[in-house]
Amino acid sequence: MAKTSGNRPDKNLAGVVRDLEDAPVNSLDAQQRQQDVNDRRRRDNHNHQHKVDMDPSH
Image 1 (cartoon, rainbow, N blue to C red):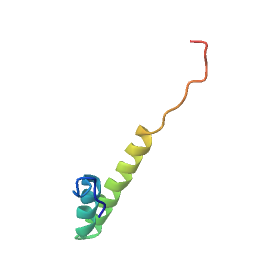
Image 2: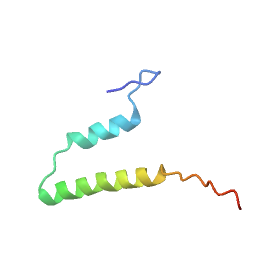
Image 3: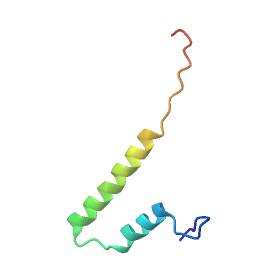
């Protein structure tokens, strides 16, 4: 696990490791977990799309 300057584990990576350690119970659980991952990716992608306004008319 990645360490920060204070020799403490990175909080984001700790969360990912915790999520990966849990095995899905059944196919519905696995599907819901995958949907959570997809939702997080979509939100992250949406939050990082910055369109530059190149129209100086306003």
